[in-house]
Amino acid sequence: MQFDEVINSRYSVRSYKSIPVEDEKINAVLEAGRVAPTAKNSQPQVIYVAKSKEAMEKVRELTTCHFDAPVALIVCGNQDRACILKSNGKNFMEIDCAIVQTHMMLKATDLGLGTCWVGRIMPDDVKTAFNLPENIVVYGFLVMGYPADDCEPSPRHSDRLDLSETVKYL
Image (cartoon, rainbow, N blue to C red; front, top):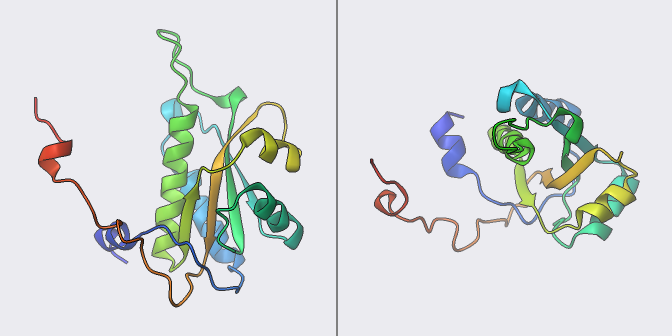
């Protein structure tokens, strides 16, 4: 797919086929996240791949927004690698993880997979359920799989403000 085709065809998939995602495709998605830019190249992201039956049962218990996807990438940040500016204390870890998640989401689309960025979670519950280390901050899930045949974008998906409402030239 060409880049414009990827960004224009991507939507939040909320219904998945029950077929597994090939490891090669999961690895390609993870690689797209690995090469994403981060503040001062700090690379604070930690991605946990939930695809076993047991792991996906936990995901289903942790959020109603799992949409029966066969895979969930648990997007986290490692506080020990966070870029924090000395000048003003700004922590870029959440932004960095959002960039990483976006790269993964777009690569998944390029590979014919669907994704949904899930923020409807209780981070501490996720951390406890998966026994994650203390220095890890959970930001969300990227559920992923092959879209169901009848899956369509939400009715509001194409509602976009005009550039004149979101862009200001100085």
